[in-house]
Length: 503
Image (cartoon, rainbow, N blue to C red):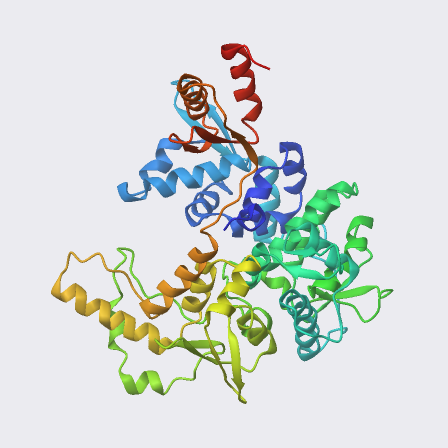
């Protein structure tokens, strides 16, 4: 992905925090439990081995626990623990490196595991004040779908709040046109729509954290509240009295995202929704994104060696056909026709970004992939690879099964074959890429054209210098002309003045 924001995981954000801020975070048991859940699997194993051991242990002892083929994972685990300052290194009398668990983190994490002194970091439950799960699910789905519908341009009765619009704009997911002041989805925004639910929510929350810092809001209070939400029980009521002023101010924003529900803005209790549980969940599919339209419907059945899992091939035709077609499953034909098993307005709106829709039935829509529809998507910042990846992710199980069968046959005939799994028809994939190349044939650069040289010596001298410093973009030796970038123009001019004694 081209957007740094979408690459920026919560782990990376935490690693970049100053150590004093990290230490303050570790005073909250709920935050420590959430951070533990976000660590790599091997790092979790090391943490559990040290949490009840206050002595330093030799790093080489941990290394011995790992098989030779797991050394890369070992290095990544130790690196993540160091960058979060969860472990403290020191050397013993013999010079061997030893590590111990951060004492602040150890105490809080131990309390989270054993039910010790948690200091309300897991919220204060208000008994006999529960709410229907149907109400919560409908509320969170409505809030979240409103954001996603607005991004894809679906005509909707309600638009997101001003705070949400500002967040979408500042994060680069949408941009506001100068002439009409309308919001339009960006390339990063389309990538956002392809993410799992937890990645989407964290994308907005990370941007929220960056914006909050400019308003002098305490990032520790914000993170503690976010991590607390991921540990609460959906359906139960929690008091707002023990929240800090920063956290109370966050309630309105969290309502706008659908993470919490309040009966009114002055209510003294709040209810976490099903969207909040994905914040610290190990399972990326713990909650399907809005209307199930944006999550993956097919899992790739491959073993660690990259070969197709043989168990997949054991599913017979009758058994597979007897299964319910997944919501949003897509079938793409070699004639560029597309069928999507969905009645979700959101799913249909996303398809319309790069598809010419033709017919809509009760549980299915049909359309045609055309040159015009793809070019429209490309001019809006959507890339060919994103379109292809989206279609592959939502491909119907029958398409995936057929592709796996074809690959297995090729591997049987030639075990050394380097062919990969082709879920979509190759003609469709190639044509989408070719349509993108049509737009990429002309590339504009800002710079300066050098011409009218008095001699070949002058031309060769300056053009070679421009090439040597890496600013030469084009040259024509016959006509004695060359073009340099805007950034390199001043360097070439200075060189010409020194060597040719010209103004």
